[in-house]
Length: 230
Figure (cartoon, rainbow, N blue to C red):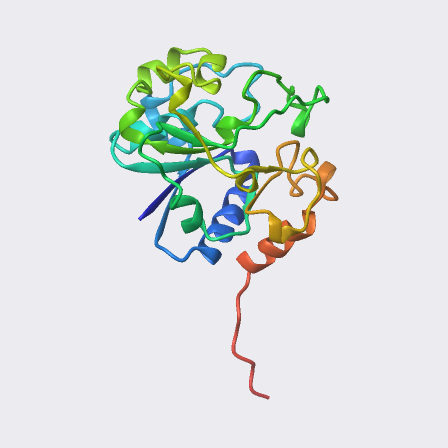
């Protein structure tokens, strides 16, 4: 079973469901998808919202290994994404010598503001944590107590690991930063990440690869019906 946890924010509900559709439509192996909803995490997430926190799941993502009982593997993804490949291909890249595997972006955004007026933060390892393949047994530092008390930089810069040697790499195609990375044919991309703002927001409805997102949304809403007899 491919275990996937997707960050959930009520302001991007449609993004979560379209991403889930894109995963299921292409997966060749069974997939389990869990939304990380604050309303379902109860006492596990108690930290106050930081003014620089752009989504509800900025920190809850790091509870993924705990929610798996620190056993096996799990994948975390931001919700503002669209998968274009078989998730089994990413799942097959799991390597037991690592605690976590990510796309190691060298990303320094130029803008100060992103979707819904959220501040655009800049820090080392920016966007590494937006797709994380967790080897849960090697992530036991990520207890609820730690996730609720550690600084954002400690969490997103992976300072909870004993060594950076425990951070493995996955192909860049699995976290293509829309409007940052060069535009390439969709057959060269495995996962689109609308990190500045998804096409479901009016201000970004014409962003790169918007047509692919709207096509997937239409597929999610598909409902074939028998033709009515005259």
